Length: 559
Image (cartoon, rainbow, N blue to C red; front, side, top):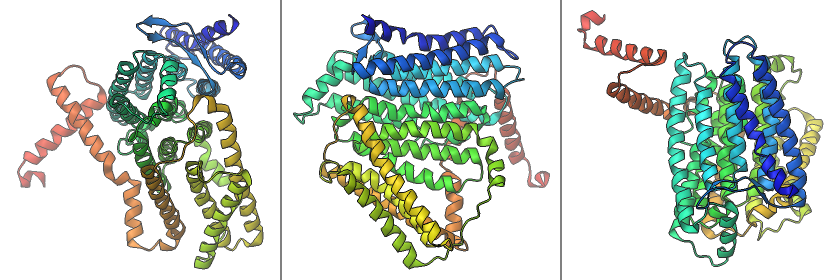
């Protein structure tokens, strides 16, 4: 009775944020005292509920709330190690972001409305991670997109904010349709919306090796929904343009809402494991996006745009990790990235001050080929030694070693920078110590994450030939990228590298094509319904009209 009571009390956390959003309609303006007080109380209450839930989950692996619905579709919360971990992370981030928002927007004439919209978004994300039924999962998924859209157009007079929100809106609707199709396929196959019933049946049928067409379709549609939600290539353009909104929105988006894609895959891990093609799509698209975005990140001159590409790369890496079947490592990466990115955005305004205050200057690179090769070998050696120390089984844990190999490539970059410089033995010692700590931390934290989440995730299995071949291709691509990054400083005068850097800085102009598509769609819609338009639409229409008039004039008139 006590356990059932606790899980039903969890409903009060998102309801408290929804109450804040409702109150903001009555205090939408400057310095809304009551809205800020209730928002603060909601964040503290959420942290308290998360802590209590964690205590109960340590004693009961799974707790489900009372079901409200019809024909096994409706409202039901699920408390397990995965949902409680995500719920706790969201509770802490919401406390930090809302507290930052109270000072950041102090004096804004619509501060109350902003806090209300932020609270509604947090409530949607909490319901998403706590969902125990397919119906609630879909409702929360759609609600997160709608509430985020209202935040993106908070400053609706800014043309840049409008076009970015429109692109996000189109991508989100495609993701919603994909998720709806996946959940319909699952419901028709299992005749229930209860996630635990679905997972238990999948555990039973996983040993047979047979996959029905419904499960294959559901898994592929889940992957499409996750890729669209997490701004993966080639639909990533909207994310690098949503900087017109206040900084707290960027922090919540990058630290929370983008994680919905990897979370969906982790939550539905048993469905993904039952598919032959879904894991391959995650590895291919996630791995390519991680490489593309990480290189584009290095070419950016704007702090927030660089952070956006960083988030795209991290989401791609998380989805690639899920495709390899190392779900515990994906969850570990997801949580770590959330706190890191929230701090990065909330402190982005201090980036220049931090650079100015830095007293350390870069060591001069010698560009010695022998030292570069030696650095790569040392990085691989440290990683191999750490894997042996932890007793990693190379046969059953091939995927884990594959993910760790990418860490080893990072260690190689660290050793190369130390050896191929004028830093001396002291710098090399620091690099060796840091590399050892990173390698041991990876295996230690992954082991802890696996122990914490193992009851809710599939066991790590030996990859089949297709998965293994794709993993090798991805690792070779990562290695080539690291090698190019090492030699790039010595090629600053190369026309090829300069041109390549420009193309990467502009995302190979895919975002321009996306812009043109969105403008064409909205122009077509406005011709059908010439109703009320906002300032940005008027600006775009007037510019287009002026351009057409100019093109129709004689050449002498143009000159």
